[in-house]
Length: 98
Image 1 (tube, rainbow, N blue to C red):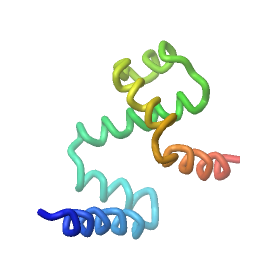
Image 2: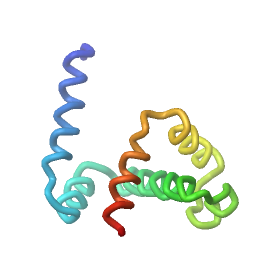
Image 3: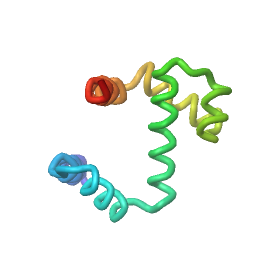
């Protein structure tokens, strides 16, 4: 598959996600799309990212999430050097929590 076609398929997935209108729709879509293991891994990475964002240390995160130190480190790298996707989501969800 060439890069242009692959990118079109990727964009179709992201556009499908953006079409979802509720938490329930999102859950249904992701449960159909992903295996339970894939969902569990994504949920754990997000929990780790939130804990790092909140200033928790590796030992606290390990105890809370059961994530390996490699996973915690990988998520931390994404927070530090990634494309700021986590920060965008955190800023939007924190303003909703208030």
